[in-house]
Image 1 (spheres, rainbow, N blue to C red):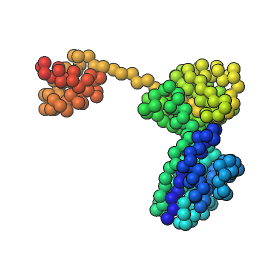
Image 2: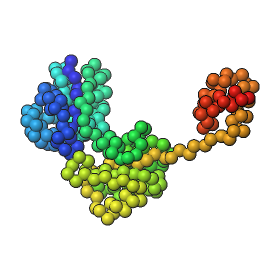
Image 3: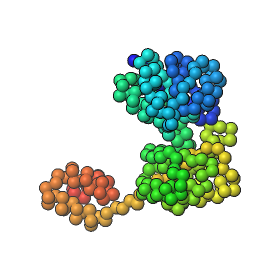
Image 4: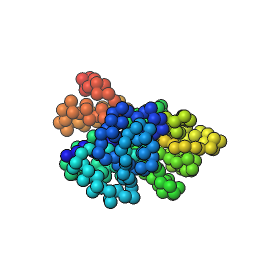
Length: 272
């Protein structure tokens, strides 16, 4: 039983290709690629002798059995044109099929445009939502943005150069003029980051014609924190005690609901 290796490839700079990734591609008995022409250039550069087969959205069903058969005999490496396979390509379906057939699946970490843009954006990285490409049509795009308008998570999208201006306009309309980082041509010679707000990004890329691939990182919706008044908190404490709730569980519950710290609530309980 072979292992399916998910091999991350450079998103621009070939120096980002790891020695382990090179070794795995040299040792794999089969390399499945999103576009064999793109992958062949990478393999030739690193003197990897494998001849890739295509595996992409339009042939994923017809090629699945061949890849699973190959896994019965040895290891298979899956690569995308750029970045980590399984993100924005049918790799996740192959992963599911390989696991269902009892094979091992192992990631070979490396470049990923959404993560690279996020960590350099200057926006919160502790909680984020990656949504790939926005819909092409403006109405569908605005509808999608309205669905996530209230979410507090940092939002990450990919966008093409010929749609980025219309996407930014719809983002400003649906989400408001939020902080944004727009990453262009990540890891390549003309890498660029715009950091500011959505209106500023729209102005910048109207003046400077968009070129290359874009990753948009947008701040999540600010959550308005409300803190109870002391009178409201005391009233809730009295009600909880009267209902037989223990001081510990009462303080824990009201700390979540009131905006007060648990120790402050304990202090009020002691005073009472």
